Length: 520
Image (cartoon, rainbow, N blue to C red; front, side, top):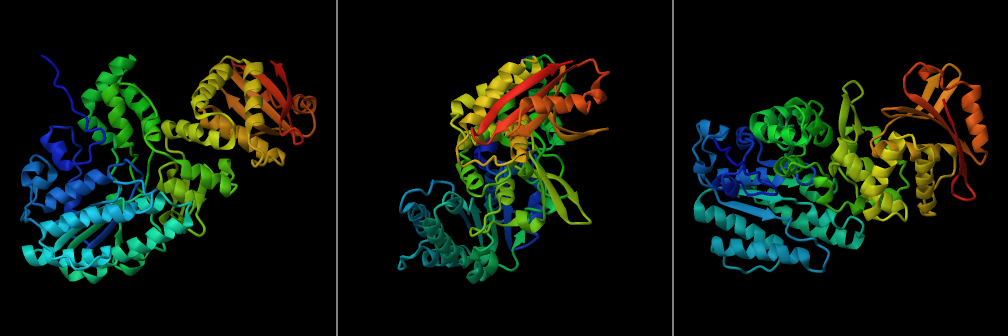
């Protein structure tokens, strides 16, 4: 019997198109009941391409009373009235907002459409006033309170985070537009906004004191993203086909998918969540790749990290409180908040007593992608050469080719820009740790032994690397320290070959000056 072809909804954000087109759909309609019977105003923050737009489109179809689209889903089993409401769906994701007048054009086009639909006699010219008239007219014409859905409310702001004049202009315009949510409350049934970032000083949030921000609530933890349970229930055949392609078992393929695309947590008690954008593509194309990373332009992150002189190693394994993650202050942008909200960091654990979150890189895709986009900001290594650099470094370390990978690392340090500070041994150590970690090596720092600490310890399938760093001294001195303190003893009985490496970094030359090795 011929196997039925699965239609994966890659990039599909319309619930109606998805359902009518027979695409695979992971049922998230159980959340509709909580929203319909809950607050009047909602905000949901999630990284890009995580399913926010599709969920918003699901809300649109529900409030338009299109019950036929929900056949066989959870929502169809609930005793709804299935009433039809006027729905104002404002998609802010239709422009890059880099040219003068982009925001005005997006708003004017959408407002004109609504004015025609709800028979508005246009008298006002300002977007906020026109919006207020549309809301009232829709209510008067239909007799039903209005549902307002705003997708990527913050897109004009995020895209101009480093252009203060444009940012302030857009912030004021959006704040005035969104102020209608409060002033027109008598005509509104529901407001639901989505976005990547929550800008704490934007008045749309400060004015709505009854806004339900569900971004951090356990109840809505899995509203976007895919759980392993949902994979096993909805994607069994796709995983099985991928396992056949990789010539491994079903469970081994699940473990591989988990390593690459799982690991996101957005609340203290969230299940592990897969990135849906990448998951759908790896199942459809049967090939692992950095799909999510490649689909966006994280340039603002590189610019911010360089501007704030951030300690990258510390940043990629850091702790902070909910207030840090919950908002962005344009006057003092937190790198932790921006990296979390954009999906490059995620919650790893939560200390309930201290009310602190520990953050880290979610998975292999983000780890590789982070390195790929970050290195060109700090060095002369082009983006096209980053992945070959990574793969060659891994191969050389796995093969024990010390001279080859040390030459590669020396070349990389020599390419770093002059504004990148390596003014002490710890900074050089952090840079090496970050490089080894982001390329996927098993690396540890300051490993305790009976007579001291190993600066850097890397393990591969066949080798242990014991690395000692010196700053403006000599590689001989570094290698002698390993010998004198017998750093190798804890691993002496292991079958793997121990390779000791002494490295000296020259502050004058601003690069690794020399290295020495010893093989045991």
